[in-house]
Picture 1 (tube, protein in one colour):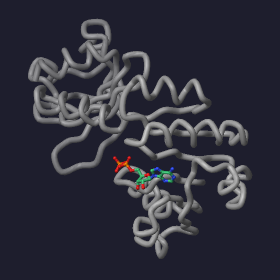
Picture 2: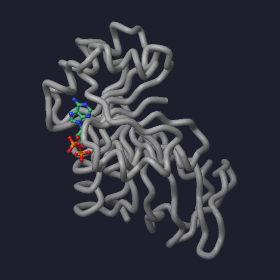
Picture 3: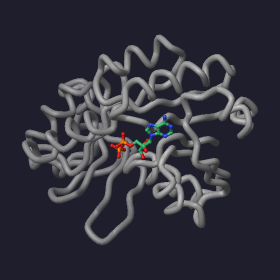
Picture 4: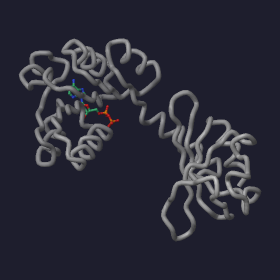
Amino acid sequence: MVVIGLGRFGGSLAMELIERGTDVLALDNRPDVVQRYSDSVTHAAVADSTDPEVLRQLDVPEFDRAVVAIGDDLEASILTTSLLAEFEVGHIWAKAVSRQHGRILERVGAHHVVLPEHDMGERVAHLVTGRMLDYIEFEDDYAMVKTRAPAMAAGHALGESRLRSKYGVTVVAIKRPGEDFTYATQDTRLHEGDILIVSGRSRDVERFADLT
Ligand code: ADP
C-alpha cells in the first residue's frame, strides 16, 4: 500500500496500517515529515508525488492500492490522483477537503473518496445533539447507531415489540451492564439501560434514539 502525504490524516493512516500488518510505502515532499515516519513504516521516502518520474522510480505503478492523503494543496492532490489513475493503480483512495474537491478527484480517477473532517463533523453533530452513543452513516441514507433501550421497549421480546414495523429499525446486538455485546434474536428481552446497536434508515434510527 502507498500512502502519499503524511499530514495528520495520512500519518495516522500509515501507522494504523502498519499496526495491522500491512506493508506501507509512505511518501511526503517534506524531509522533516518523512524523517518522523522513517523508523515506523516499511519504507518512507521524500518525494514530490506530482512528478511521474519520481513515482516511477519508487515503483508506485506496481502497487495495487494507494491513498492520496494530501488535503490542502488541491493542485497536488488532483495531479497525484490523476497520475495514479494513469498508472492504472487498481484501488485509489483519495482524501477530499470538500464535496467539490471529492467530485474532481472522482473525475480524475479516484475509486473512493473520503471526507474525514466533514464525516467526523457530521457524526459528532449527531452525538452532541441526540441521545446516541455512537453513529455511523453508510451510503444511501442508511445508518447504524449505538443507543440505550427506550423505556417503552422494555420487558418485551424483540419478536413481539414490532420495532421494525413501527419504527423501521432492526436491533442487531444488545449489551447488558457488565456483559459483552451479543446478537439480538426474536426472543431477546430488552431491559431499560441495555445498550443496543440499531440499524435502519438514518431518519428512523434517529427517531428511535430520541425515544430514550
Ligand atoms: P492533514 O489535514 O491530514 O494534516 P495536509 O493537507 O495538511 O493534511 O497534509 C498533507 C501532507 O501532504 C503534508 O505533509 C504535505 O507535506 C504533503 N504534500 C503536499 N503536497 C505534496 C506533494 N506534491 N508530494 C508529496 N507530499 C505532498
